[in-house]
Amino acid sequence: MKDWFCFAASLAILAGQVALAQTATPPATPPATPVPHKAKPPAKPSSTTAVWAPDVQQALNVSATDFAALGLNKLTKAQLQALEVAARNDPNKHLLTCPASGTLPVGRIHVFLTVAGDDSTGAIAGQIKQAIGSLSEVDLVEKPAQADRTLHVVIQEQTTAKRTIGFTASYLTGTPCIETVAGKAKDIEMKGTLGTYTDAKGAGLATDLAGMFDQDLQPLRQTATH
Image (cartoon, rainbow, N blue to C red):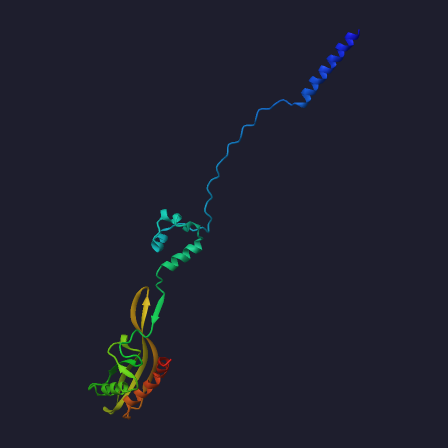
């Protein structure tokens, strides 16, 4: 009888150990199959990102294959456009240089003089040339490109009953300049004083023109002394 109780007790202990083992250790599950990684599609350029176009080739001399290599694809459209404008010759861009040049001694004022109109003998033109050339520190030159100032005179003959009573004149001063537009240079004049000499019966047409022109030269003389 004692042996039977011992056998029953051993059997109960063994059954408890089996139950405990089943509770403590869950059955192993096969590892989950990893989900394959999908590559993200390349990001599309935004609407503000710079892209190559034929005008880029024309303005910057950059081909489509070199566009990204030079990093231009990292610019915005506005930045690329600003770069193109800076590199392209602007047809509206003007560069003005005045006076153009001087070939006579420094400190002298170089004047280009023209006289036209009613002066068949050339006598009045000669008087005007002499009067202007005799002004202080003034030298007459043959070309506008050599001048610091210009003086253009047009003489008008005044008559009464088909008889000449004298001459009047219109005059225009100017400053010779070189205007550069898109890399091309041309001679122009910046217009100065426009005036008239109206005393047809006076004998001082040349002298009065010289006096007027001497006053016109004063700012240029003051600039030259500073």
